[in-house]
Image 1: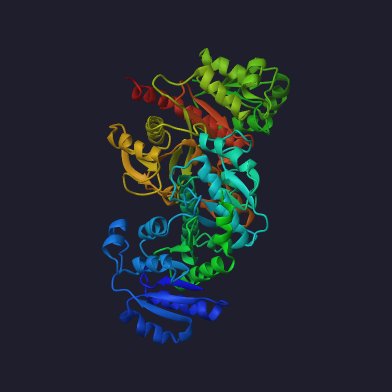
Image 2 (image 1 turned 180 degrees about the vertical axis):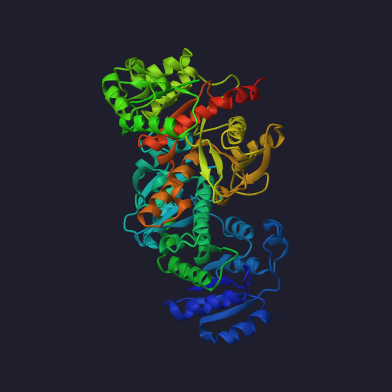
Length: 313
Length: 313
């Protein structure tokens, strides 16, 4: 298995990306060969200093970088030699099995949706966030922002994708699914929630437990919580702001610490035909290490094959 | 000015309602005459024990109570002698100028919307929540649950109602208005947000500052934040859950304490033709005191006249 990593993406690249690679190789049981995409002149001394096992990685040179504020579609088209363009090219041609970048988020989304495309049967790929819970386990909330307007069928598909992710990546056996809503009983909520409820209830692939409310998001009531990306994104960013506030107020609490999502990982795009993980711009070594681990886990568990099976007509 | 108070509503009525009346009369500069609606046999000894100034209140007997779990419309229709039915009757006939209850929320909403009705020009009355901020001031978020599906025009009206509430009740001079959204720039967001943005931007009654994101809700970025009631309700309940978690984890923090919305007040229904305040079932003395104060403030500031003027064609 070969995992492609954009070494030039993110605010602290390439140094933190190199540190992340080192951390991964030294602390995670690894079976992957890493394909490090970036400017050779910048990478060579850093990789040399890091004293990595050279059999574990190879470098693919890229001469361009897509900046954080560039227009995604335009940049992807015009910068064919950028690390992100090359990453998707390698992924599409089968030379890597997964691709990770903490670079321009829009370009990563465009690449995921239009270069490698959605799985057959998936109407709208989605992004999720892990939801830390007090017992140390993680729930999953999706969509958290790429699908601002949804149809009931989209939410049903998010539930299926999320359940498989919860099971195979988060290790939850028979994950429960809840519909984010503003009342407990069936029939409550906005038109979208009302129409989605029966679809979730009747689908044999799901362990649906009904509606969950705002107060239930951080509890163990449901392992997978589905909503459209508008509400999900606001919930995600508000949860992050609680962490910011707690930090500013000097509140020392292990649990509150966990809402600092950006510092410890990336976001896989679910429902596309190959593993793509998008990191936050502020990613440092730990986040890079975690993203490589996640890509490896997505490949070893054959998560995407399981997703594909669920969408076979 | 006469303020009607349902003495039988809420989990701790009538005792906590009586305590709230006492607290109000003893600690708030008051000009209102209180009309206490409830079972005389239950109230008389409690009021006597409380040693209140008898010139400050009168009692209107009610022989029935609408239970917390009764069907709102049915109960209002069948229990004409209930404290809530009598309260709306007094309000409609001008015998009280405001009505407060911590009883059946649905019955209060039905009474507000169908007994006294919306102001002329207001399409959809709304409910809001104060948003505590770290500097001690309060923002306002609306709608928080009665309008799960909205049109752009509804959000525009919420912004106008919320701005007047922020100015006259929360004491914010020229309150800024933000549109809750999932991106900063105009054009971002779901279809509703995209269509609402220009309406807010062009309205001369509003001090619109653009989009605000989930991470901005608890900041001073906007004094009034508008959204449909689905997202607003989820945000509200999630914020409450942070308080619950902080309390459970023994986090001692004045600011976190303020997310315990239910314990310290009620929710005015904005956009109806007379002041109606709905309390939470768990309301105790302080919450009742605060709701009476709020009703008095809504009357002394002539808030509803100012709202009416804004909706004159």
